[in-house]
Length: 292
Image (cartoon, rainbow, N blue to C red; front, side, top):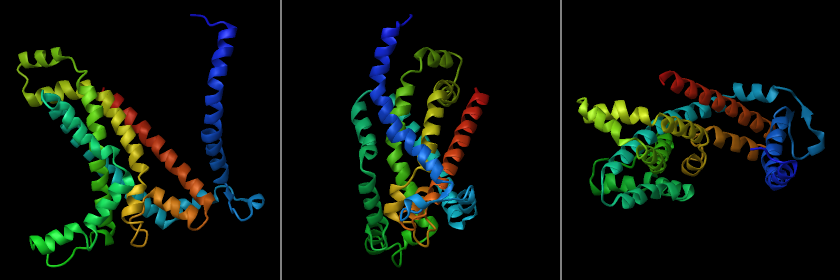
């Protein structure tokens, strides 16, 4: 259907406010951040910035603390993404089988998703603190541990608590996504598979999973991006301690920007992570296409 010039003009006018807001608050900050990554940026002297080329990028890649935080982010993503997807899918699969109280189960499993990250992080910190609830239960109630365990005072202990929180928070979101996908699988496929002698496990792997590959890819990409964007839980639970060993890329970037004033370094770090995420997303799309 052809649109007249007057119609195109009216459509342009309707889109203009949104485009202006998008340009001011999204496009311009991205461009400005990219420019900042090539300068030695000092807010004490805004008009006296020094162009240093790719020096910020070299500094980021050679920084041992960035390497540790990047490794922590990779581990966090590799653990939480499969954990959320598997538990979320199993929850959705079980809820899809029941006929009563289905809405109640949805609400129950979705409650952690709408819980504030700050509140949930503080609760987990209280539970796993050296003088927290878990140690009190282990030492004083069931007498399993001889003394309080310092869960949050080691690199892998603190990260494990943050990963546990990430999985717990993400099960509900995955449950909703996979439940919607499961309800679109035609019942005829299950009937045909049953006639052919397929077991329940066979129907799962040969009917259900192939039918929701698009949803699996969507969840995989979104959760990978979310894994690299983890910030609040690590910041609230460990704060990067001890000695920045539990930092992830965003908490380390926050520290460099607002504690040391290295805004050029932080800008370069953000674009390095953007490139990494783009490459990971491309690889995931290619892998799913090859499987199809």
